[in-house]
Image (tube, rainbow over all chains, first blue to last red; front, side, top):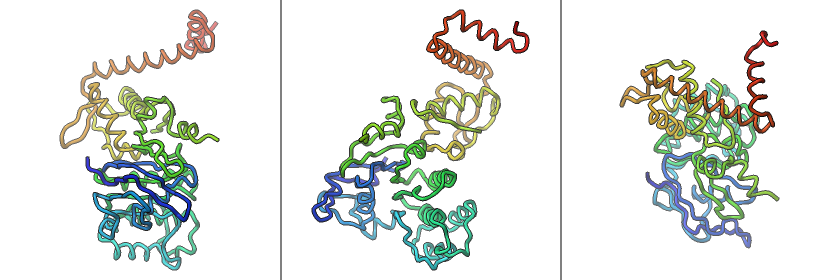
Length: 232
Length: 124
């Protein structure tokens, strides 16, 4: 087992607000990991640091042993919280764009998912519903043969039936030599697909455990544990 | 098939039990090849590593065996499958007895209820 993501005393401040205050986290290759925590706990900040969109205020973060850089970004596939594609593009053009931009883009895998999710290739992103946009963006993200997938709220705006399909898309895209880290609030929906759960609270890691271990040792689901730990 | 997972137990143990049930009930016959891990994972909507773990456990129990390149197969040992059937039946019966005890039924009442229900139309 090799390490794909490593954070040591990782800190990020926005002005006086400390979004991450000393995160220690190690993720191994071949896992599907849920990044769980209430709003403002630092999930998006952590993901953005991992793909080099933000720079740490302290500590360090390493992808495959290296600091985030264009080199590491070549093996990281990132799904932003909001759609990051030009609205005038069609699904077809977006696939062309990804194919030109990323050497590891698997066009056949993308076509296959577009087919199964019944997206229209000629529809512009502008004309797509929020859920359809999210599906397209996820397809593009998962169609890359990356080592690390960072998915920021992939289930955010989609209905429960599509949620199921999106989880299956993540499972389909998953490979033994890759790790998937995704943030979500919908813990009960995603629990079965996770190897590990990471709980963030107020910018720190509260818990990082295997999902089976949580159930085995505590006799409760990750969702139940989350509700207990974050009860008001 | 439908996969349902409870919240209070690891998913791999539940998966293990449900796969055993599928084998015992003959959905996958003795000697038949099981779907690959990835396919089972997609079907059940669970993590592939979890499926792997459940299958290893079934292998340890002798209910399935793997052939290096060809995949995993249901055992051809009919006695082994019978044994698994008996085990599943015992587990279910214990769950039932536990539930009846919690409802406050004693042994006689529980047996009478079983007699009545399993008698179907023939009940007095």
